[in-house]
Amino acid sequence: MKSIDQFEKIYLHRRFADFRKSINGLSEIVQDSMNLDPFKKYLFVFCNRKCDRLKILYWDNSGFALWYKRLEEEKFIWPKHFEDDVLELTSQSLDLLLDGIQYWKMKPHRILHYESVN
Image (cartoon, rainbow, N blue to C red; front, side, top):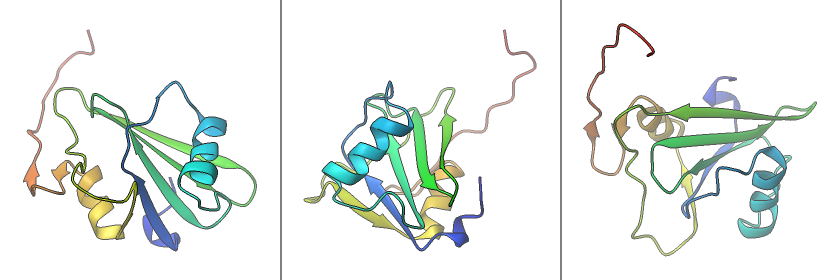
């Protein structure tokens, strides 16, 4: 993924997304539900209902790109008590979220150490 600092704005879609949706479905959410232009230099962050996966959609001048993160044991703390369905994040708050810091509670995820993928 490109550096977060290369993007003008970062938007978090507060409602849980159907993660069967890929680029086309998520870009439709950006355009129709979030009322934003998916072709701008913005990042769009989505979470699944279980709060263990994130998808980040962006346009990179030649096509859409989709970044995906799955947590093995922890959950993302997702905002529930906001009036708006769209929240604007700073690059620092997205960095915290991606690094495992529960942004709204400021509590880190446990660090996991595995020796096998089985």
